[in-house]
Structures are given as structure tokens and as C-alpha cells.
Image 1 (cartoon, helix red, strand yellow):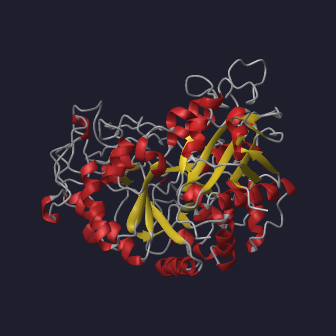
Image 2 (cartoon, rainbow, N blue to C red):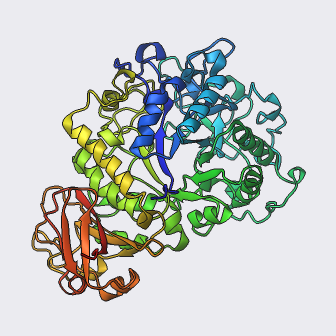
Length: 606
């Protein structure tokens, strides 16, 4: 069987991935709590990730960031402009450097990062890093390329100017005036002031025009200017086109293109773009065209949210980013819908049937990156959300998300062993997320790391089974039906089917059960995916109807079909084709929070 061309991305924050220190003191220093290193991604670890089914590693937050830890020639940043002692990976201090925390020898941090790139290449793993275009740390100053630092030639007397790199709050635009008054005043070691912004104040990364940003703002960052005044609406049509010469574009465009080119030249295979919707589409078309000229294989996917008022397009921003050249974009709507089955956070609890409305989105359906966890979202196993159901809730959620399209999928380190992110970690508090701001260790994931053996030697039987299940899932979705195939939803055809998982006297089916077909015409391969989202009910006697239209869609099979479960167990069956449309495929019991991935093939001749 040909190797899958579908990206399977493993998100790993180096600070957490290889950290075996189990002190976990809330708000602790690097000396107290430890920190993972580039070297922790050794041959053993990378081999295990490759066997797990990973094709790409997104090394989250590798750039040099604002931090409370000092190194020779690199003083610590003031606590006032930090979130956590380690600092936010998205408050970048030098785009051309890597975080010294992650090096065994901080003076040789770039060499250690390059060595990691070579190790990954040897193991057939492609490395992705962040590209953060919307904002930088308040302390940004590049030591590697000082000629390309931001703001050196800005005119702070203008809120907006074409070639200014930043936006500058002017008297009368907001209450009060300089100096910058930060929300950290009164906290441990903080004055609430930042000396460089005594005479001028810059707009925050989340577009807040204020001399006194709040604790809920991205106060530690400042917004970059792409030649468009965001306070004047979303019309960016006056910006240069994709063929514009470098001297004809805003200064920020040129500098960001240099940053992108720097990491391409180093051998990075691609980029996860942070908050891509907050940057003009004209910039993306211009820069991505240049990036593809340098390396046509560079992989680019974007974090973006169409519902964010700060998006810079009146149309659907996810479609706009794909049109601008992105390979894939986040599928936040499907994530929210799955969470909504368990949590009343978006205007009422959802039914599995509600997923159908998110499958009719054209080309984007198969170019969406789907995830059940990432660093911005709560852990599946957190007791705070997802109904507090624990690690098992990831099975139906991940099976549906990973199985429904051809686009990339992503696993967040710790997801595969049920990391719950329980308890306070420091700046993050107890929020159900593994902190990206603090020096920390993930207690359940550390059991898989097992002192650097990466053998899962300290995992419970339930955790070992979960990791094995995820590995099996990634193996199934590498099959042609999932890599190249089309999607056919079955919930609508089963709404009136009383044998489709109804519970508690429901008159319509599809509350807890979701199913769909994947069919690849080239190989003739067909899979049925069925997920039971119910937290406590075993669904017995389920029959899944496949209408004649679906049978024609899957190549009009004839005679009898062989039915083979490929994920949950070794269940097999043989059924006449006509039964699928008339009586439905009868399934074994579907346990709570479970999924089946069933291959449907023509019966071999005796």
C-alpha cells in the first residue's frame, strides 16, 4: 500500500515534551521546574512518533520569546510585559533566533536546532514551526538581524503610516495618555510600567487602542502594521497585488518575507500561521507566492476564525486564506460542534445531526485541519469541560474529526495518553490547558516519556490502550478511502430510522450517533465510520441504512459484501448489498464513547 500523503501533525512544545522534572511548582523557575530541550527529541523519541503514524512535527514556540529567564548577553524581560515566568511563545523577541531555554548549551542553540532538523529528516518527519505575523513582544529587538528589527524607523506621532511597523496610540484616541500603564502593576515584581513606552504607546496584539490595556488583552504584545489601518474597516483593496516588487510594498511585508525565507533556507518544511485572519489577504497572496518560488513544497496551514470581528475580509476568511495560497486552515466550527454535544457553551447543546451542516462547505471541507486538542483549547480529559467524561471522550470525537475529510489532522502531545491539565500551573491557573506560559511538566505524558526511554513504561493499562487506539486510528486514516476519498453523510438518511441509536424515547434519530461513508474510486475502497457520542448508553441493535443513492455513489457494488472492522475489534460479517438499503447494516453493540471504522468490500470469490 502506498504511503499516505495526508499530513498527520504532532504538536509538541519543546518546553513540555521532554521535561522529566516532576516538581511542578506553580509559577516556578526553570531551575525549579525544569525545561525540555531540542535534544529530548532524540532518535528513540522520533522513532516512536514515526511508528505512531506521524508525518509532521509542529515544534511549537521555538523562536526566541520574551522571558523571565536571563542568559549571558540576553537579560530577562521585565515581568510587566510577560505572561508567566517562561513567557508566551507568541510574544516573540527575535524572529531570527530560537529560544535559549531549549538548548543544552544556550550559546549553540541554533546549532542544536539544526541538528534536530537533521534528526527529523532521518526519521522521515517534516518539521513545522510557528509564523506569527500579527504581533511581536513589546521588547522585540533582533540581535541576529538588527537591520530587520521592527519600529526603528517608525514615526510615533502617527497612529498609522504606510511604512510604520507599529500602530501608535495618539492623544484623544483613548482615555488618558502616555506612559503605557500595564495591568500588571501591583503584582509580584511589577511596576505597571515599561520604560521604552514612556513617551509613546503602541496598540496591543489584539487591536486594543489604549494607554492602559487590561489583563484580558494581549498586553504583552504589539500589533504589526501591514499598510492597512484596521480601525477604518476591512477594505484592503488599496494594498499591492501579488506581483508587486519588494520596493512597492509596506516595510512590514518585506521584513516578514525575509523572516519566512530565513527559516525556509534553514530547512524548515512548513509553518503554522498564528491568527492568520488578522492580516490582509493581499499580503498573504504576495508573500506565499514568493515562498513557493523559493520552495514549492513548503507546507502552510493557518489558525483562523471566521467569527472573529478582527478578521480582514467581509467574506468567509477561511475560504479567503485558501484562495491566498494556504494548504489548509483550522476547522474550528467542527471542533465547537463536537464540544457542543457535551457542553452548553454555544447557545444550547448540540446533536450529532448538527455536524451535517458543516459538511457542505465546498473545497474547504477537504482542506480543513481537524483537531480535538491544541494548546489553545482545553484537554479532552479535563474535568472542567467535555462533560467531565475523561480520556474516553476523545474516541468518538477524534474518529469523526479525523475520518471525515482528506485534510490534515493533528494530535497534541499528551492527548494520546489522556493528559488532563488538572490544577494550577502558574500564570494559566487551573484552566484545563497545559500551560504555554510556565515552566512545567505534564504528569501523565511524563509517564510515557519515562525518564527519556519513550516507552510508556509508567502508563496505566487504560492509558496504554488509549495510545494504541490512537495509533490504530492514524493507521486507518492512512488508507486510500481517507486520503483520496469522498464523503457521504448518513445521518439524514437515518433520521426516521428507529434502529439508529434512539434513547430516552427520542422520536428522531441522530442525537448521539453519527455515521458516514468514505469512498475512493481509484482503489474502490469504502469505509463506514460510526461513532457513539453517548456518555453512558450502550447502543444495541443499531442498523445503519445506506440508501440506493449512496450505493450508486460507492460504485454500485453487487452481490454480497464483506464487512470488516478495522479499529475497535475483529468483527466481520457478510451481507447482501440490497440489505444495506432495505434493512440497514446491523452493527454489534456500540459502547458509550466509542467508534467503529468498518471496511466494506466485495466478497472474494471462493
